[in-house]
Every structure is written in C-alpha cells, then in structure tokens.
Length: 236
Ligand code: C5P
Image 1 (cartoon, rainbow, N blue to C red):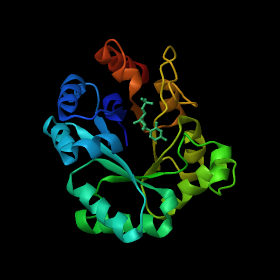
Image 2: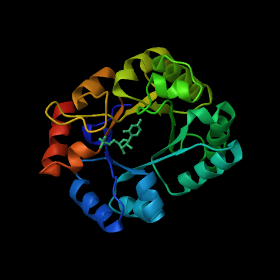
Image 3: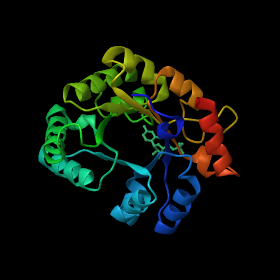
C-alpha cells in the first residue's frame, strides 16, 4: 500500500460547531486526506460533521473508541460503516470477542474488502505505568501495548492507534501490513502541549507509521495551510 503524503495526513478536527467544520475543511482539504472526528465534535454535531467532510470530497476517521458489550459495539460499527467513513476505532480492552463481533458484523454488512479500516486503541498515551497499575493492569506499558495490539490482530482488526514511539515494535511483531496510526506528532520547533512522547512527522513515517494525526500544530499555527504544507514537504 503506497500512500501519498496527503493520504497519510490526518487532521484532528477538534472543534464543536458545523461552521468551524466547514471553515477548516474548506481551508485544508487540498492538504489533508482525512479529517478525524472525535468524541467532542461527534457529540456536539453528530453525523452532520461527517457529511460536511464527505461533501468536500475528503475522508473521515471516526475516532469514537467504541468500548461496550460485543453486540452493542458490533451495531455501532455497522452504523459507522453506514456513514461511509474511511476508518473507525474500538478499544482493545473491550476484549477479543468484542473486536471479533464488530469486525464480523461490518464484514457482513459491507462485504469483505469493502468495509472501513477498523483500528484498535491499546493503552491511551495519557496513561503511564502508575496510571495503568491504578486500574489493575501491570506494566510495563510497552509490553501491554504489544499484547493488546496482538489481540487486535487476532480479532482480524486492520491495525492500531499508537504512540509513534511504539510503531517500530508493533511493525516488527505484527508485520508491515498491520496499520499504525500515530498521534503525538510535533514539529521540531513546536511546543509539546499535553503530549509527552512525541516525534516529528518525518520521524514517525520513517519509524513505519502509515498515517499521522496532527491537531494543534496545524490548528494553532499562525498560518495553518503553511503548517500543513510543511508537514507534507517533510514526509515527501
Ligand atoms: O493536537 P494534537 O496534535 O495533540 O491532537 C492529537 C489528536 O489525537 C487529538 O484529537 C487526540 O484526542 C488524539 N489522540 C491522541 N492520543 C491518543 C489517541 C488519540 O492524542 N492516544
């Protein structure tokens, strides 16, 4: 799968109104292949946000991290596929059965090979060893991430969302074809915000990331188009 720099760039559309969605999509659709619709935007605007992006000819990563009983997640996945999104995700801690159920249900509805990419979320990058221990999961984080990514593969998911620092190990263990989508991207001269383990776009792609998710480094730039363009140049 050879992706162009534009196809690899996912913009985190972390806004709360359809007007902002329209403005950002109009501004960035020439530079960004996929717009990420997360919990904040989807809760505020619903499928309308997805429709606006599709109407502009761009694609959607529906980042709702489904985590519930298998039957419920399977139905949510079928609904996501019905919106025509390019990719959506589920939380691997929902278990093997939950992941299998959603993959099978979406396969059945869309036909194999025609369904959205289904990704697993492993350990949130906001959680360190102390935080996972508090909820009863023993570290080290890296080993848990690899274990949960393996479970996602076993369930037939297409890949995982992961920190750029975990990409190499995931690819080594699970194969090149197992997709990795990485947030936590910062330009070498930009501030880290609340991301603690970051890489530049070039570093992430060199490490093997298939897609990079970028939010604030574009959204808060003085010139967002120039920022997006700089990223495309960097990974070309
Ligand atoms: O602004 P920034 O580039 O940090 O945006 C990253 C996006 O990726 C945000 O929408 C955030 O919710 C999301 N994300 C993340 N870390 C994860 C999963 C998703 O930063 N592990």
